[in-house]
Amino acid sequence: DTEVTQTPKHLVMGMTNKKSLKCEQHMGHRAMYWYKQKAKKPPELMFVYSYEKLSINESVPSRFSPECPNSSLLNLHLHALQPEDSALYLCASSQESWETQYFGPGTRLLVL
Amino acid sequence: AQSVSQHNHHVILSEAASLELGCNYSYGGTVNLFWYVQYPGQHLQLLLKYFSGDPLVKGIKGFEAEFIKSKFSFNLRKPSVQWSDTAEYFCAVKGGGADGLTFGKGTHLIIQP
View 1 (cartoon, chains in turn brown, green):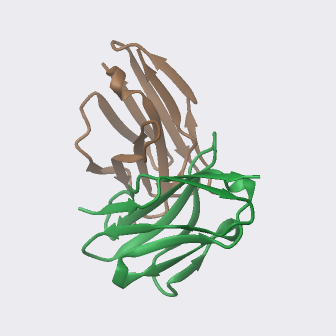
View 2 (cartoon, rainbow over the protein chains, first blue to last red):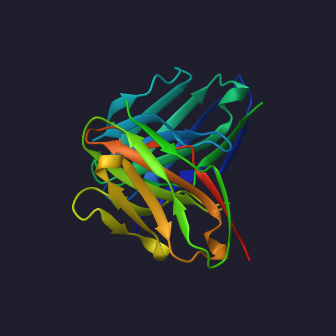
């Protein structure tokens, strides 16, 4: 089973709201990732967690705050977002950081 | 920094035609190479990957790709496409460290019945 689940599927939020995206995998993978995908564009890496520690932050604005509470769960906390942050947010996981990544279905975010 | 270039952004083929999608990458060290597919309304799925060994790799649904190190290329092929192959195809590269994937801009493939 190579399933990564993400909730919610869709999210609409105002610029003053605080919300969180959730990603879960039960494959025993030790690396987890957040990507952002704008319409008709490729996914762009935001964060990498390896063994529950943040190993890469691709210069993402502080209004995005990742959290890895345990090896199966990855959150992305959102605060004071801008309309240009509207996108599909993808989570992925891999057995180790150098191995194949498996993607979840994404959360489609609209910021009004 | 690594980069990936996909030559064709839109490709339209008829069913049973042969397919080749180009991918070139730029990276100074050892790379792992991937092709992902995104069917309409679905999430990214792995088609195939190359880490080492035989440069001709076979993936799901009859796809294959050839790694040519001297050309920094990893082109995707399928001898006979089907209508269900209509999708967005992404080539991606990953270095050997704890980093993420770098994707090409994607190729939107439309198969006409």
